[in-house]
Image (cartoon, rainbow, N blue to C red; front, top):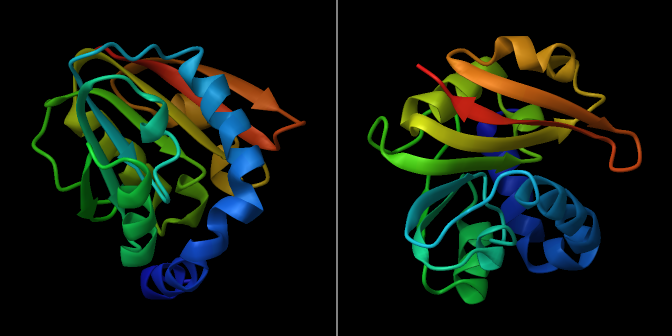
Length: 174
């Protein structure tokens, strides 16, 4: 499925997304936020923010949600009025390089045309020494060996059969 079709699908289901997936997504978000700590005042990006679930669990700081679906962004604004929301793409993040303290990308990379480009973009916008947290479906072909595909970072990979995801968390080191 192409980018336009994916955005169209999420636009049409934005109003019921939380009802369908909140429990599942909150488990993933909790897993990530227990391992990647966010501190007040940090610049945090949620690449593929959907309805803004992750951002609503953060303290004070400059929070940016990016998504390809206008309707998902509208839902996110209802949940977290203090964040900035931007129509954009994880494969071409509309953010200056080395400007973010944390970047999260939950259940998104399996949907993009070029997941490696998405990983590279996450690393591009992170400051050196800053952390990231990523999840993607473990059945996605790109999930196999993902830890070795993250350039310029120290990363740990966790596989969860119960959540059906692969999680990658770490720090940009170059």
